[in-house]
Image (cartoon, rainbow, N blue to C red):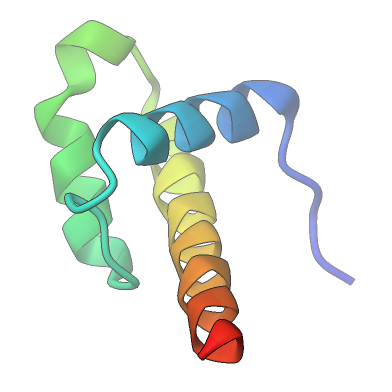
Length: 71
């Protein structure tokens, strides 16, 4: 069983994905760098940044799977 992400991580990840839908991909390293560029606005620790990047990967995969099922 995996670990559960806290509300802060989920809230920020969803907000970033909604605000910048084409910026993030299923590549964790790419997402981590993009979040690091926004670091000053978000004021996150390294651990939080990594958790958010990982959760965004999961959300992007879910969105692509959902789009494929609709077609």
